Image (cartoon, rainbow, N blue to C red; front, side):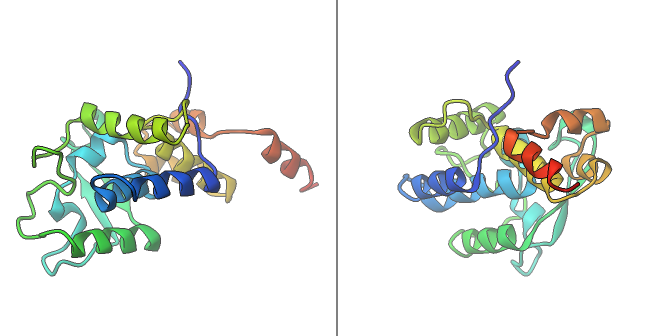
Length: 188
């Protein structure tokens, strides 16, 4: 099975630019950023509730718990949000009615939760429109794990952040390219 393409900064910027031209620009941009900066699976993004991300005062949490029903493999896990993603979620929340913490964070066209499939399709539509034919709903997740690995974050921490039970799974996510190999040998 082919692995989802990891995106560089320029490609991510192109995706974000395109999202801003869509029918639901803020929602779609925030979904993409959640994939790239929290490393969540499409199924997990689709299952997010307002109360996961926002506290009672309407502030974006620094971390939250994904329930076993929301995540893969029937395990709960803590998701940590960096400043850039917290800002994007805050901007998204400011234009969205926050009210009921059980409501979907990202509403589909019909007003309810996205299904895992419709969320995957949203990613595919966006990537296809910007000419990234090998990108999929897993691209943000792979890019998140690869970027952290390239910054020296150890595989044990990466596995925890990704919600993987085995570090061997996490290792398969880390993209290795010729640029990285060239930089690695220069460390000697």
